[in-house]
Length: 165
Image 1 (cartoon, one colour):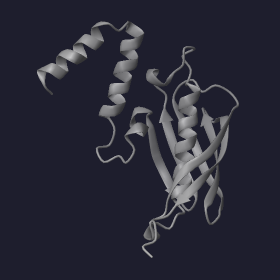
Image 2 (cartoon, rainbow, N blue to C red; image 1 turned 180 degrees about the vertical axis):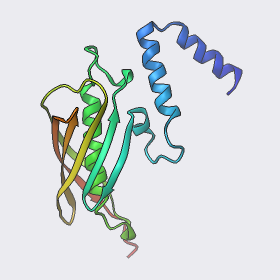
Image 3 (cartoon, helix red, strand yellow; image 1 turned 90 degrees about the horizontal axis):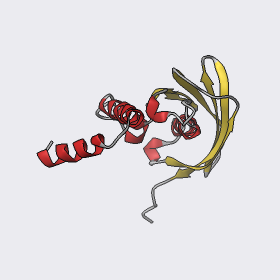
Image 4 (cartoon, one colour; image 1 turned 60 degrees about the horizontal axis):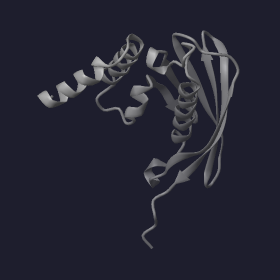
């Protein structure tokens, strides 16, 4: 790291209050602890980890942290939504024909907040409902402390390589 970069970081840190410093430290630790070969760095910042993904099923976890909280000090709805998107995407991706070059992206995702998630490990269980020719329909259930805190359903568009003919 250059001296110029270090000075820029110090100047940013000098103007932060304690809460902002806690959030900055939490974010930096999440990035630091991310696996070096992680495919999606955004998931590292959000403390999301893939536990399993196969045969249309997935489990993804999110470790609650200060940088993921809202002003009420509970998990921000955007973090819960991001976990649902990750889990459903992992489930959809697990049934694609990778040999044919298939991939997928979220077309739409709906999330229903049932109760707040406060601390600890938040778990999302994704499942494929149906794979069609162009889309994959998915759902996820999100748990905190073994209580259902949210449900999501959505559609992923299947992307295929352009044919050369």
